[in-house]
Image (cartoon, rainbow, N blue to C red; front, side, top):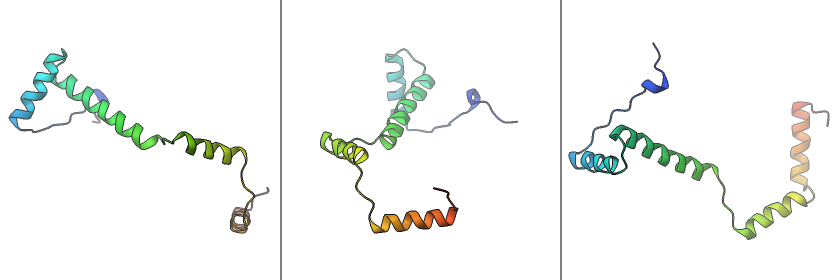
Length: 94
């Protein structure tokens, strides 16, 4: 029988010193150890996912990107050739 999300478990073994430190931190914020671990892991996961999905640009780089979007250069021969091959391969009507 498949488990529901509320039933998923992640067992973790750790040194006693680590356990005690985590338990103390959980107590300080008024959470159970389980709540503290889940919330901490979720915050870390969110930070990693955002870091991997978001592209940060300097102001100058962003201006360059937006300028190229608004004023794209003329296609060169390699791009025209690639577009023609794509059109032939997929029989595009455009």
